[in-house]
Length: 363
Image (tube, rainbow, N blue to C red; front, side, top):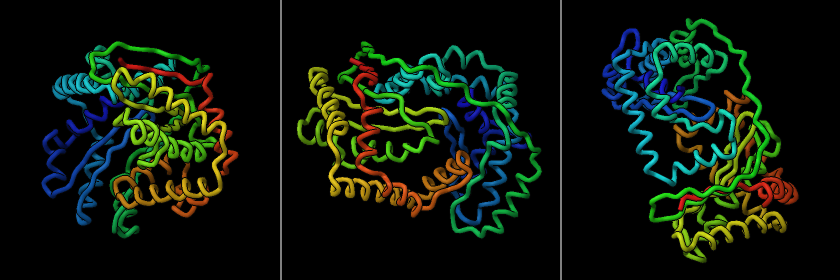
């Protein structure tokens, strides 16, 4: 439903039709977009400095004045169903959501954000209004801006367009996550490659081991070509073109997963190599030199990502939404520097323990 609403806020407000929304920024070279995750929806735009007020007014209109026209709803349902079909044609993407459905079985967190064609077809305008009343509250919204703008002007314009919005605070709490049970599952797919994902529950956003897990994940399968899994499965053996790991912390749980795609006859060997790398991190301390190098690599990656204004804006907004503050780069660097080799090994023995690793294979 949240993903459906994200689409529909582009389809008409009390004073704009869909084409007016699209053209409002595009006619001055700007862009507006949105995404929906498991725990948040974000509408964001990029534009020239002089178009800040135009952009802020547009976003506020879409968020607070959308009317969800019935005709547009019917059309958008078909678009989302096509989006679902397109997604199902890409096993390297679908496997992540199917894996979360296994790991969070029986909990809402396991549901695919796109939804199902059956449910999409059933949604009514009344369902949307009721869902927004229950879930969209002003005390859980953050407005973020990044760019060469005078802060006093930003405050003045946000007060102009957002200050009149009535306060609407929520009291709902996220439900508890059920006990985790290790699961292994294989699904027959008509694909040229085998696709495999291996992982476990991990730490939530407020766990003090979160930064340790971030560093551990970067060592294993981060974006660098020197990541251990990339060396083992691609550089040394030539068994996999794409191998990666991901750590996603949520508000009351988290998930860690390693994904790779390979020829079907090489699936068993690739799985063995992944588990060998897990065992190395569980059983062997990083030397001081190795640890220093890994910390510097992660710090450099984060610094580069902050050079991307869109990435920085989304990061700042989410941090303030979740924690009520934003760490500086120096503070993040200090947190990384505080991680010890003992802590990395301890976390590895929790998250990478073979008795708790689930697996999903498309073959």
